[in-house]
Image (cartoon, rainbow, N blue to C red):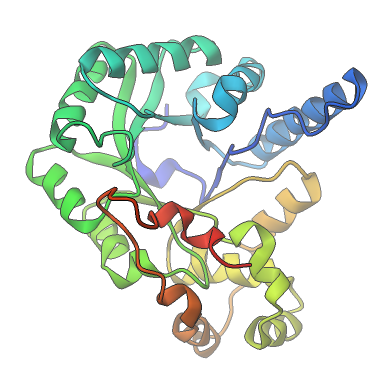
Length: 301
């Protein structure tokens, strides 16, 4: 059973969009697509990827239902499964019912970690929601709890209230460094919380920009631009990443990003890289109608 961060493979399995039908033109194309996604998940697991995040919010439960097929084919104690609560949470029953529903759809007795976003918890004090989540630990329906898109004050609040997080999902990539700028990543590192960076490649949109620094380093190390980015995040920044891939070649490419080392000066060039247009987008951390941090990577091409 996976109990510590050290047991987690550096690249986790993101599942946003997984299990959703890529084509509704005919039954055969739909079945082939889902079969290919399942094969890819099993392949990623065979290569060591042992952390998976998901949510009922992804495809309104279809992703969870699809993942039940994956979980039937692997040893339960060899993978760390985390799922999220979704809005609205109004009371303890909502928390319990949502987790029960997720477990039923996935065919599981428990998840390893239950997570909550500020949006999901917006109708109640965050610490109250986490007290309800703690009850699910007591029931054996989850082993840990985690966070998602929490700012520094909220992380501090939970820590001061005694809610020890296993992980915290947050945005991080070459162009969007707000969680680093605000000290959120450092806080997680110093409090032994696994910072799980989503959209590390900005869904391949970073690649399409053809930034000179990435072209230069790609040629220098004979690696793809995506491998340069992932290597920098994984080996230099020491940040765990969540990355969805339903293509076996891309899975191999992602894992191979761990197999080389760049010079310190090259890592520092990536550290210093800024995308002014992203830096100037104000983030609404208080759910008051502005740009939430999870939307930031999608605000520009």
